[in-house]
Amino acid sequence: MCGICGCGEPPSPRHTHTHEHESRRVAVEESLLAENDRSARALAASLRARGIDAIGLVGGPGAGKTTLLEATLARLGEPGADAVVEGDCASDLDAARMRRAGARVTQVETGSLCHLDAHLVGHALDALDLTAVRRLWIENVGNLVCPAAFACGEARRVVLISSAEGDDKPEKYPAILAGADLLVLSKSDLIPHVDFDVTRCLERAHQVAPGLPALVLSARTGEGMAAWLSWVHDGPAAAQVT
Amino acid sequence: MHEAKLCLRLLAVADVHRVRAGADRITALRLEVGDLSGVSPEALARAFPICAAGSAADGALLRIEHAAGRDLRLADMEVI
Image (cartoon, rainbow over all chains, first blue to last red; front, side, top):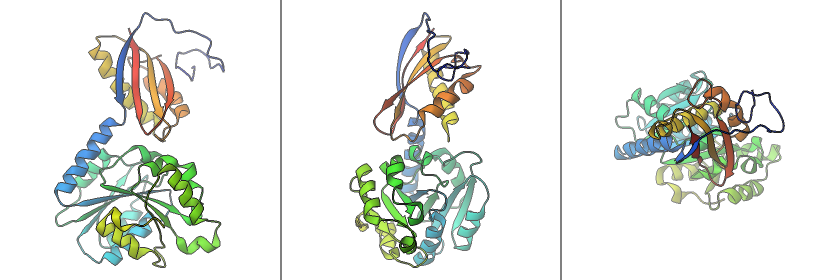
């Protein structure tokens, strides 16, 4: 089958056949992402109305999303205030970690789907008792590509890039940064051991997302965690461009 | 990658407009793909004929145009 148009003719590097039909043109001008955007806005509004601050975490597999969340819950020390939606292709390993950290949690196993979306998160919340919850964490599937296009109902979105991943990630995955409210450079304790240049990484990030606030932190050593907790409590104004 | 899912969404949106236009078939679609949409045009082009098989857009020509920004938009289409 022709891979360019699906016309049933054998593949050809030059698309030489014509498509002459007595057809008429219909103007559409409709976004394919609009339905999810609408669902995400409605979900965000309903969470806001219940006094819940929804924070999305996105980043590649192993960027440290779950570890940051564990360290955050331990430091916040507010039992019952936090709920977590965990997105992973398979397993409930992260949900078990969150439960041990004291959060109410629901795990979304996405199967082969590479991202969470507002619809999935909305249904996941049906399984969560949000009574007295003040913060909802939405940890996306580990992926720097696909979550960019799908808002999940969060009021703020954090992108994590770990030092071990390399300082070129903003340049390679610009879309994910374009929709972020905060960039966290995680695993700062590894910086001396890997070729990661914080200044260069931030310069690259700001080419894509000018003025994006950023924090450098290590959930393991606690470096930068105070500034992070300020951001969690107080919102974007608390984060300085490092 | 989620291009197959997006193709199904594309076909659903297109079909609503086909029915609205009182047409039987969709013969071509023009899709604008934002450079920050996180979508691979090549993967979309590959998934489209598979997803469209058996639908009103079976055999339709998918024209993909690059655009600025984060959106993925069905600009227009041809129907008969």
